[in-house]
Length: 91
Image (cartoon, rainbow, N blue to C red; front, side):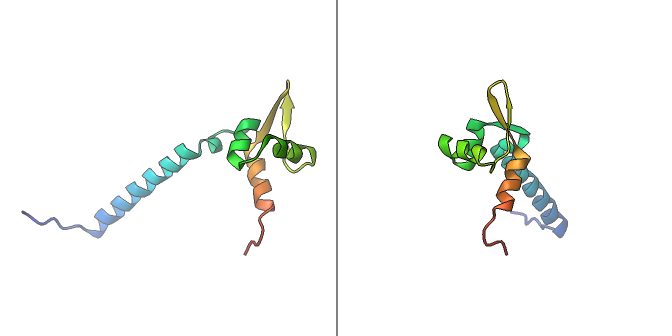
């Protein structure tokens, strides 16, 4: 059995391939981040909220939204901003 020598370049190439595959998996799993506008069920699933809690967030202005023809849309980036602004014990 012949021994194969692994060079630092081989390890760097392996690392780059591995990181690229992990990024692809994360993007595929997150799914919601690929969309700019989310509907209420998607937001509830993303944040783990009940229907009533999401409604309260709309009423008290916690989450900005847009309403068109009876359908409520939320901007994904705005949701992320609200989460960042409400971080507790940020060091």
